[in-house]
Image 1 (cartoon, helix red, strand yellow):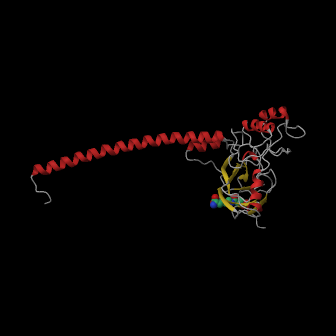
Image 2 (cartoon, rainbow, N blue to C red):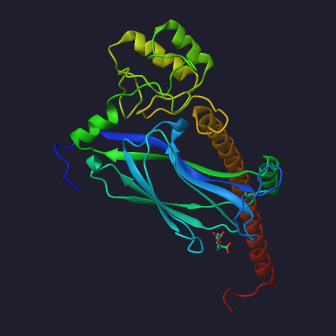
Image 3 (cartoon, rainbow, N blue to C red):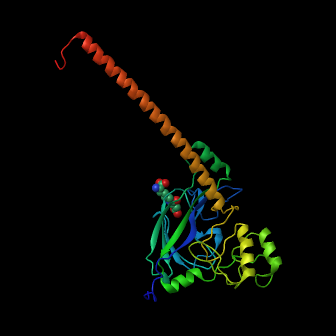
Amino acid sequence: MAPPTGKRVKGVQIFRPFVYGTTAKPFDEKTNPKPPGVPDDHTHSWTVFVKGIDDVDITYWLRRVQFKLHESIPNHVRMIEGEKGKPFEVHETGWGEFEIAIKLYYVPESAEKPQTLYHHLRLHPYGRTEAEKETMRLAGGEIISWAYEEQIFNEPYEPFYEMLTSGAMPPAHPLPHGPGGVGGGGAASSAASTPTQPGHHKSNSKSSISGGGGKVKDKDKDKDKEVQMIRSEGGVLERSAMIPLVNRPGQPFSRETEQVEIKKLQEAMVKVEEMVKKSKEEVQRKEARLKELKAEAAAAAAAAGAPAGK
Ligand code: SLL
């Protein structure tokens, strides 16, 4: 690998959201028939993947991904090369759950060493409670186990910083089948009713955004407006650090989810505080009782007239 050129951009951290995980489905004659050639003991089809949030392209920072599967699987080490706008993924069939090692190889310009994540393939409903498992069972038999993650690039080299921060743009043409580039009020307003269509991006519009915060810093006001409208629907810009505002089917990681989680944490904190308060009161009651008992014992000893310590 050629050594990276240029200096590091001091004091800058760029992060890029991504999602990884597994999706599994039991074989079923009607909903998921077993393809010919699949061994009898295989019960599920499953996929393991790494992809951009909202399906945006991430191959400008992630070059390839190695998935290390269970050794019982033929060719259990799979290297997947990045293809622009497509997830890194492996489709398989099998009967058992296991830990998958997911090794991320970055673009050479980043000069980053590969990094490994671990993910447990789930085939069966899981959760802390029976109710959680039941919810999964009801979801059409599909078992999803996905994680949101943020890749942080600390003080990137200048050329890589350019790659990371230039060219933020809408992820899709706002008109489903419209020809030409993005632009014009009509296109922008239809974007509001047509959420992002990954893989259909043709535009060269050059809205750039700051990697750290995800704010538009373009001079072109019309483009800004268009970007804002797409954002307001929860879609994210390509080459950005944005997180969708709202959930859509198959896209559970958003500000909306974050708010729900924050609310759950706040409620849990209130509960914990109540429990701590009750425990403290209980300790106080017990201490008071202990004091009483000690006083009673001392009084009894004094009444018996026994000399202390004998
Ligand atoms: C278990 N420790 O016992 C795990 C191992 C292995 C899963 C699970 C084989 C697929 C194939 C397969 O599903 N292995 O033969 O291609 O649950």
